Image (cartoon, rainbow, N blue to C red; front, side, top):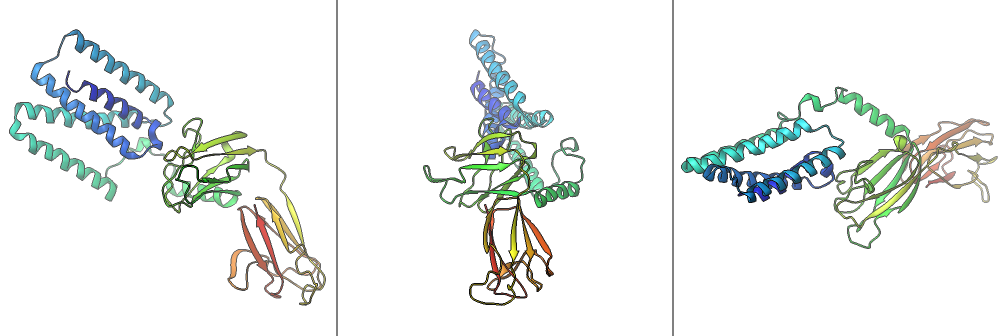
Length: 360
């Protein structure tokens, strides 16, 4: 039967793509499977219109093979799918089937109208795509959209990101070349509840996709150059997670999710005499410290004059990350560092007083 092979390939591809398994792949593959299916249906419809339904053993065997492939892959796809997309999938198939059958019928029975009818379908498809992209007039029905207001969702996301410590992982420049370093660090130790942030520092797209289940646990989709992807580890189980880049599958790394530890605190003293610039005088003691993400640094003013601990430096000015205001003699100021980076700080009243906090 003409077109049966193309129908088998196209049906399998569309079923897998639109049921949620292939959501990590480039969307062009979805379009390719749909195109394969529509071509198969055109050939199939043409064969039916010309010669009717064949009852030969070869046709029956071919039909059985096609149905078996479609049912097997379809069942497997919907079993693994995390998307409630049955209505969408049915709609996609109808959108593919109807034009294919109409075009085939017109081509067989009224060939002079084949080109105008095909042109109408192409223009209608183009108009629909333009409306969806440009104006949002065509889109998923409300049963696919959460009733929770977008503003509320945005506020929740911002709250999580702003309060939870962030562990940064870099997708290194040149990592798309095989055997080059890719994710840094290659093995990360992260405390449960922290945010993991992947930053694409390369000049091409990448993903951060859980490797064992092919994106079921987490999947960034495409991370464009300069963009980031974050996950909240609060809902993940303790243990090691391997991940990879779908686009460049040789790029692999892992992180170990560990138990929550007691919040760490590091003390920094502002010693006696810090308000006077002199050789051998400590202004912040210790001057340079290295701490882990989530550590709280406590500054205690042991001098007899007021001081500040203000992020930034004289050359670049105040960074705005933290500022103690005036710390009176005997007073304290504390700040929790939730992201890895190196911070300079100084005293606004006595600018020769300088210190550094390195967060790893």
